[in-house]
Amino acid sequence: MKKGMTLLLSLIFVSSALLAGCGGNNNASSNKGDGNATATNAADATNAPATEEPVSSEPFEMTIRHTQIGADKQKRLAILQEVVKKVEGDVPGLTFKLDGVDSDVNRKEKLRGEMAAGNPPEIFDLFGSPDSKIYAKEGKLLDLTPILEELGIKDKFSNLDPFTYEGKIYGLPIGGSGEGFFYNKEYYNSKGWKAPTTFAELEQQLADIKADGKVPLAGASKAGWVPLMLANHLWSRYAGPDVTAKFATGEAKWTDPNVVKGFAKYKEWVDKGYFKKGELGFEYAEYTTQFTSSEAILLYDGTWKSSVFKEGQSGEGLIGKVGFFNIPPVDGGVGDQTALMRDVNNGYGFSASAEKDPRQLAAVKSFIKNLFNEEMQLRGLVEDGVLPAMKIDQNVLNENITDDLMSEIVGVLNNSQSSFPAFDSLVQADVTTEISNIQIQKLIGGQTTPEKMGEALQKVQEEANAAVE
Image (cartoon, rainbow, N blue to C red):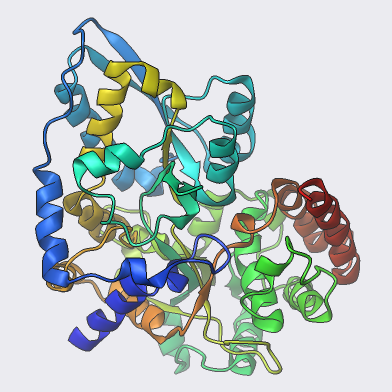
């Protein structure tokens, strides 16, 4: 286990390629550091100087736009609520309004509209690359660089590249994540199976589960990002983990044969009935329920899903009965066949308007001080399954990772030799909209073919590329 923890640290905190939030251009040397020093520095950050005294104690209100809604996000909502109380205590007169919005709606609809109108919330859930760079270029985000320097935590994050524009930091990642298959160990044991190590073995298991009258794969595709987690991994297996980063540069195309093979494999699994029928009408919450009810045997999701399998959560009935594995290598696949989707792209941003208001600026500083520290990072890991975005001492991690599922996830992360970020952090917004809101649903619904899907995406990609030339 100690060896596993050492490898985890080297992967999470030293190799920035494994936590890439944008196309593989991270500086790995920035993630190096002495373990004891990081523990000391984390303590120093906790004891950082108090925020500046606001110029007035008159009542004022600020809004925090968050995406911690739904039963399975109650742990992280509770953490946010605790931080809110601390900040309100730090800043006289302050009252926070919590505005909970679905993640997809916030990113693709509300926040975009608010940014265009110039009235975003003071604090909001922010996607790193490419969103933060676009908003920073337009002058909509608060430059956090001096605040991080003041609090002494600028160098305490494992990777800030997704939130960095022209050398300045405009957002902070709340945690990291990886993606893979959660599987029902109780069912697998009843069949005498182990987690598959070859793609052929995986496909045989899917066929056998279907023949057994069970749903092989949970499915919920009303929101396109859900099926695209798995589809993204499939086309990255066939075409290489770095292929998506090349679409925006023109070095690769969505019509490349190996990319189309990934689309075709996903469509093949749909046609074979491996996903629950009616998935195009199901929301993400139903996706989880299909697995926690043991209706579906496999669930492709992010490592954050491990929080569901804890006491008091929706999946507590499966405590000790859930495993995790990476997609096995595909025959003839390009590049590293152990590559895992990982990033640090989810976090918080702050309106540029806070710089003009001393009280809002004091609230921002207090929010960062109280949320981005070792205690909260560890709580996110232990309570919610969110990998730390900040550097944490190895011994501290060893003491806090205690459940079997998280240990198994750690093993999978250690065995992946490289990683790739999710497609929506690499391609332009118009391309993300095309694949998320149109093409993946058409593929699932039988309204397009893998080849036509590639052609449609490439057309939008070329238009997006031309717009930035």
